[in-house]
Each structure stands twice: as structure tokens, then as C-alpha cells.
Image (cartoon, rainbow, N blue to C red; front, side, top):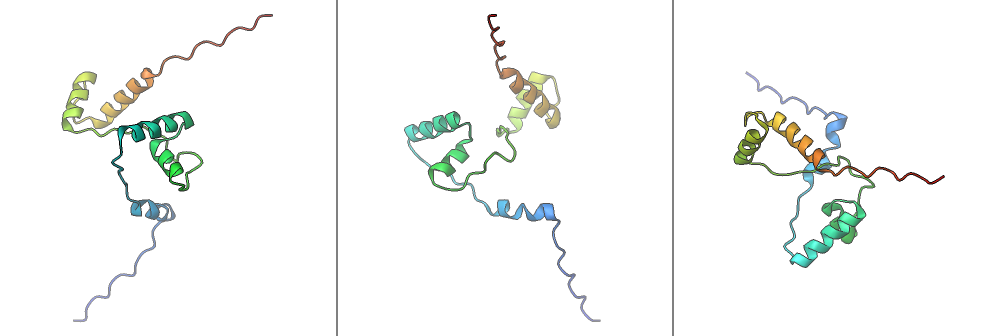
Length: 121
């Protein structure tokens, strides 16, 4: 018997090729004093950018004109899901339902905007 030749490599779909660069990226954590953390966070807040974008700007690295996917992130473990499930009256296994309920709670966190002032005629 002759060995079976290996299959030729398939090309990746175009949308997957764009993610190759992101897969090679490495997250770096900086251990700095509280004053540095606060300065970076405050500057990011005032510039309406993420802390990561602010760090890239300070370091002279390219910064995207606008975030590709603006979002908030948090790390949740099993006990966090259990607490949130109880809070929202859901099963701890219903992670999508918990995420949706938490999203609504975060949206409700935003204070209402004041009504526009009426102009005097």
C-alpha cells in the first residue's frame, strides 16, 4: 500500500484572515503606582477612549479612529453567575439570559438626560 498524500492546505475564508493579526497580539499588564493608573484612567475618560487606547496613545502607538466593537467587559466566575441568576430569577446555566438581564441593568444605570431648556420668546 502506498501512503495517502496529505490534503492540500485550504485557504481561510477572507473574514478569518483578518483575525490572524489579532490572534498574534499579546495583552501586556503594567505594574505601576496608583497615581499612574489614575492619570491614565482620567485622561482616557476625558478623551472618551478606553484605557488601552490611552496607553497606546501615550506610548506613540497607532490608535484606531473609533473602537471596532465598543463594549464593557467583566470577568464572571460560576459563583458570580449563581448570584446574578438569583438576582434575576434565572437558572445559573442561563448565561445568555443573565447577560441580557445584566445588560438591561447597566442601561438603567445611566441617569436620564435633563430636558432641553425652553427658549424665551
